[in-house]
Image (cartoon, rainbow over all chains, first blue to last red; front, side, top):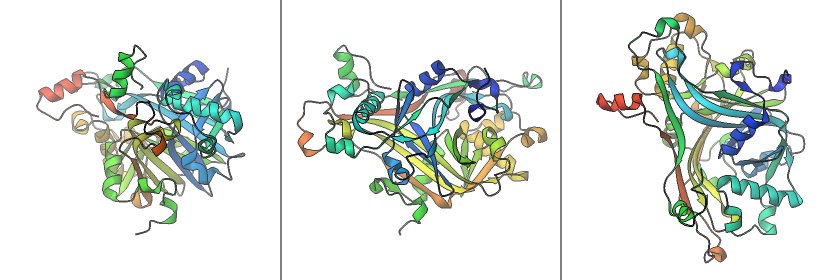
Amino acid sequence: MRPPERIRIKREPQRARYDRETIDAILDEALLCHLGFEVEGQPYVIPTLHARVGDLLYVHGSAASRMLRHAAAGARVCVTVTLLDGLVLARSVFNHSVNYRSVVVFGTASLVEGDEKREALRALTEQLAPGRWDEARQPTAKELKATWILSLPLDEASAKVRTGPEEDEPEDRDLPVWAGVVPVYLAAEPSEYAWRRVHDGRVGPPA
Amino acid sequence: MRPPERIRIKREPQRARYDRETIDAILDEALLCHLGFEVEGQPYVIPTLHARVGDLLYVHGSAASRMLRHAAAGARVCVTVTLLDGLVLARSVFNHSVNYRSVVVFGTASLVEGDEKREALRALTEQLAPGRWDEARQPTAKELKATWILSLPLDEASAKVRTGPEEDEPEDRDLPVWAGVVPVYLAAEPSEYAWRRVHDGRVGPPA
């Protein structure tokens, strides 16, 4: 199936993925996203927290709240999530790259209100540290009111994935240059929290 | 000095930093950035590589090249770089947060051409893996032509930094909930490349 024009990836189309399984896995693994929106001709890109619940993506919008306050109803936004997996060192400078998995979601943002807001905040909290919603004190009505959460549907989403080794030109393959991939990943330092979780027989440290 | 309106951080202003030392250190440490721009009412946020040279930020623009081709001269963009440093687990859900260092650069993108392009590509390569420009085969004229690099000045840049422990409300401090920060960082797996660099008495692995 040919994806809709807006989400179709034109550059390096062999890296494009449009299946929800791939998209969801990337969204669910990442700890942060970048929210893009435009105000009076100036694009803004703000790092924030996100969580997926079914076919909806929730984004913690407080950092953008002043700018989004009037725009939330109907503003086009873009939420991008990127996981860096490796440094791809080829034999030529030109073929250097990175291994990564990214998702771009286009959509019209809605402000989350009412009962949905509590569930969205639960998802955002669990994304940061699974199990934490039940451990920590629940939000009061006043705290919920002070929380800004945006939602957007996942029907305009695409993923882009580069995996595998470096790709050198045939004429470069015998150059005396080391080539390969240096894997990188987000690591959590051992902490009392992680230790307690393992000690209690619960799941390991977050991240 | 009061920063100009556009770059002034209104949300959590105590986290704002406007000094170039802080801004440069974040830009120089990060391995990727998110480039935001707008085309016909739709914001786009694309992960890409960046490097700073003095007062200029170079951004690898190939992934956005089709969209930016006509807009490069005069398009307003936003480049955001975010380093995640820790998961801040407070005693209340509401005070959960992350420790991070981010930079937002607003500017008008210019396409880099001529001799500057080679130097910009050198900087992008060195940002990915220091020393790699001299190790790998240099770009040909054809390869340089196929490379799209944007530059923008750093005169509309701001940083935002959260560090330190969780911040609980006074009435929550005695709750029986573990609170603290779980430090996170980007780690590089041992690789033949890293090993060779150490073995050769050169600097350690990238990242």
